[in-house]
Image (cartoon, rainbow, N blue to C red; front, side):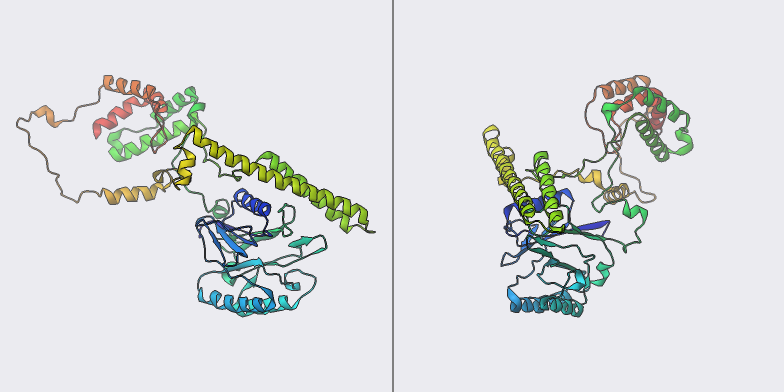
Length: 453
């Protein structure tokens, strides 16, 4: 497991708006694995997995995982734990994370009191060899009548030692009476992450260099080419392969000096219906909820003030829910209207499941060493002493045995074609225009290198 995995735990209260915000939060926070109790519905998609009773669902970024079981009442809860315990044991030595709204209260995970159901869950976790991930006493379920800690997270000891940042997102509106829970699982033990691993994400992949051609500084490019020509030894001293590698390094230095690099496109940070207006409504809803919560903690308690603030909070929640519904409807109408503009466009491809995620070609995201290894396996070096077959010529003159040199006129023709070329650069990232500027000063080195081949 490279980098880290991000987890999200939520309860949707069977509400459409709560599930919409849950999906938006997954995208916004780049969550890898999420568990939602009481979902509004479970889509028939490969990265969703729900139980038969519709009481819980697991959502993953790369693909679905086996669903858990539903539970009903105290007797059903005991049966649920009896069924889940052997499953955890059978998965060994795989690492297991168990989380959800288990509706069990215990002081072990921050609730003020322990109920029989909470005591039973404690004993089950101890028997199953699971470690508790909950920290602190922040309430995970908040209602007008009060709050409690009923959303619990467990994990096997090995993965529990790698958990970082378990927290309750108390300041985020969920349109549910349950708050979000987030944590990360690191590839190394918590607190022992190396600087290299902590600064890189699990989804970061190397790619070939790219530079912003629109911001090309021609003077800096020519100056860097002049400096590169001074520092470039002759091909006779280095050999053809080493000379070509050095020449490529000089071109990369020219690009670095004359243009800023182009970073990868940032990941999508919002659902298709999300907008700044909905974001502002969510912030306003958070503010109304905090005002109501602070009012309830004041002493002496003012029921009239609490009731007024609660009505404001409910009204803002309703406005947010309605805005989400209108945004989703508008996005759907825009998709349908696209049928009139382009019958074979995005709506058609979506219906035929032909839309795939936008990503760079595989040759651009492979590690250079891996790419060289693949090319080496496909085109291995010739064994020692191997002489490739050649067609004999009827007449072979002495001059034909010497490869012709690259002339000045041929180099000028190449420069003319490069200056007018507007196609994308190759894997090295050097654009034709930059190469044309560089060859004004590096043309002699390139001619010498080409003649030595």
